Amino acid sequence: MIVNCIHYRADGQHGPIDFTEVPAALQSEDGFIWVGLVEPDEALMREMQRAFCLHELAIEDAHKAHQRPKAELYEDVLFIAVHTAHLAHEKVSFGETHAFLGRRFLVTVRHASEVSYAAARARCEREPARLANGPSFGLYAVLDQIVDQYFPVVDGFREALEELEQEIFSEDYRRDTIRRLYQLKHELSRLRLAVAPLQDLLSPLVRLYPELIHPQTRLYYRDVLDHARRIDASTDTLREMLTAAMSVNLALVTMAQGEVVKRLAGWAALLAVPTLITGWYGMNFESMPELATRFGYPGVMGLTLVACLLLYRRLKRARWL
Image (tube, rainbow, N blue to C red):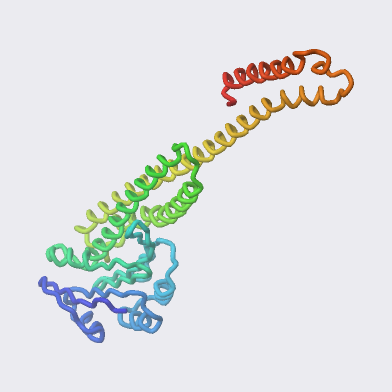
């Protein structure tokens, strides 16, 4: 459950340490500690609480997960909860990441997320000058990676919507199309719930918490905020386009059903003409005209055929057939 426990020193050096050595390292006033956890149990979270003096309410939220995106300050420790989204094999997997930011430590907790923050950690290690500003730069790298993972998801949604739009305007109605539209709308709604609160979460990081966030790091948080706003605008646009696509699909299906009804009504009208004539003469068994005259029966047949042809021509012009 403890993926990494690394001590980043003020001289730019870093290396893993045993978790039992964390209290002594915090007392040394040399750099900061970065601990990465994956779905820790309650016992491990209690150890974290004792080692870093974390608030019990924040520990409870980090252990249970299923939190809304938020940033809350508990005395001198900032607790952050964000939702993650990752696109893999044309499927979107959602998860949560919680972070505890202190003056000399950063603790990240992943829940239901397959993507680790090794890339964010490696990025920080490649920039020791910025990492010397403290754990706030590490938190920035984590948040930046989370927000950057939204872009492929949004692009995947856009490509899926374009493909579905082509199916919507095809001549054949497919029941699977509306199912995929609904599934896409469901996933987009989940992404919207993850992205929308990010602006309220990141804005205070740009302006507040001077004791926890280094002034030179605030510019990087502002860049993450800008990316979050772009993602939020993209999800709004996709949601409107998806709603319009569902409405258009419903309208096209209704129109197709109307065309079928019109064709059925047209053929029913054509069949009604011979039915009416034959039924009319069929009720009289004594003075039927085709029995008294030589050409009466062919004449009735010809009259019926002409009436059907005229009606067919009229319905064809009205596009009922």
